[in-house]
Amino acid sequence: MAHKKQLRSNRNYKDTVFRMLFSDRKNLLSLYNAVSGAHYEDPEMLEIVTLENAIYMGMKNDLAFIIDTDLFLYEHQSTYNPNMPLRDLFYISSEYQKLVDKKSLYSSVLQKIPAPQFIVFYNGTEKKKDSWLNHLSEAFENLSGNPKLELEVLTLNINEGHNPELMEQCQTLREYAQYVACVRRYAKEFELNKAVKLAVDECIRNNILSEFLRANKSEVISMSIFEYDKEEEERKLRKAEYEAGVAAGMKDGMKAGVADGISKGKILAKKDAASSLITLGLTVEQISSALKVDVETVEKWIADK
Image (tube, rainbow, N blue to C red; front, side, top):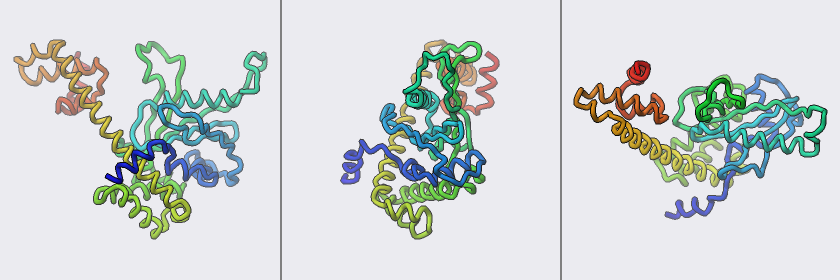
């Protein structure tokens, strides 16, 4: 119970180990080089423009910087979030507003702005791919034709075993992934508070982020407890939302006439249910799980409609 009380008292603490680790210019430059394939050596080339007060729904913009003529927004996520393009739209708008604050947008001279790049570093457990793209246009209702406004976010999986070339190029990122894996391993056996402390001590002994962990031990422990607990809460919330969505979809599907098809057999009923659920916005994978039918069959049913 003392553990839970400690977590509740820390609810206003929004920083993360990832953000703290890569707020160091040297570490951030190493991460940028690994992602971009560049070979810059001077950390002072990074112009840090992170918006410390850019908070939406309690979430900060993690890291933002300009190098050469490009503006990079880096975000860290421990749970899958399809709304990152919309969040990044808010962040980049704030960045541009700050950058042109003392310039006139009524001038006849075109105001130049740095080209943006949006990258999410993901170390949750839901997604298994090495990388994927999300687009702002996926959120548009009733989109016809090409979107007039678009924003593309690249997500890179930074769990152990993923993106080996990226990890090889950035030692700090690789060791961060090892630290997270260590916390999760201990969390399967011990109370979270103890698990994090054991993970920190093991990583220090094994020279994994050892200098960083020694210098920031108490703060890292506090942040890690908060992050892991928050990750578990978000996972439970997503599971509940999914189950509620499937239940509502099944109910609406039955109202749409699936009940009349049950007498014709279970396959026909499931086929009709799939058709109804897809119109309600569920994905093929969600329908497959709800109806206990393989994805290929669901795709065929939908294509036949």
